Image (cartoon, rainbow, N blue to C red; front, side, top):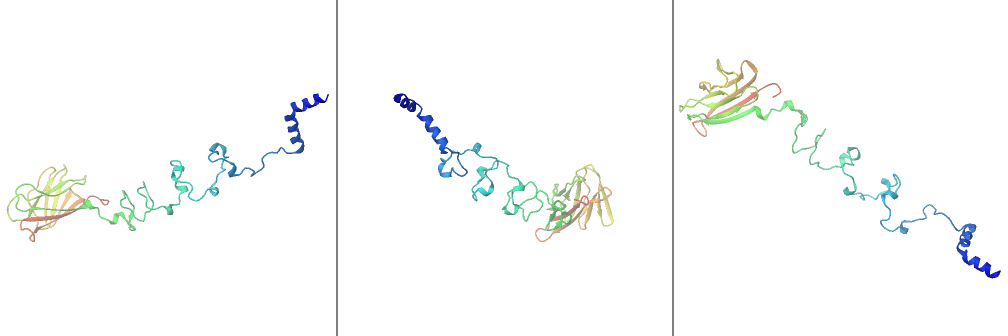
Length: 237
């Protein structure tokens, strides 16, 4: 009988031990904060092990998130403090800018509306020899409304004269004090004295014209004629 009891205990020792811990309360679940960082092997906690929003900004060390940890296009203007930015290499558009190397378009410059500035293409300047028999273009006017070339006079005399060559089909009117000359489209005018200002306009349209002033350059060369022009195509050009 005694041997049978001993055999029974030996064959069920594991079960008796389990019952012992169950009855004495030694078996228990892990409590909160019972597993510390030192108990976890480096690199063992993966993204699936983290709960939603488990890691917040307050739990991140300053400067611990670098650019390589941010997904492309994850940050927008709402997440960025604009005043913290330095020079922006390029931008599609900007409401304001303290300075810019280049800009395709701007409503104001130094607080002034763009209408107060003259376009560079409005001003023309050129020169030619006053004793040259071949055609020499002093300057050209191309504005999509009426086009023409201002030419030298084409002779060798000392009289300061110019010619107008219409390079479009529209008729041109050349107005000088007390004198008006018509230049048909695609033709060249006769010699026009350059001793007084003249206006070249698109037919009878006085709002589309170019003011021309010429003079013989006696300082550098006695046969050089210099001309200056200012064109006006419309109130906005």
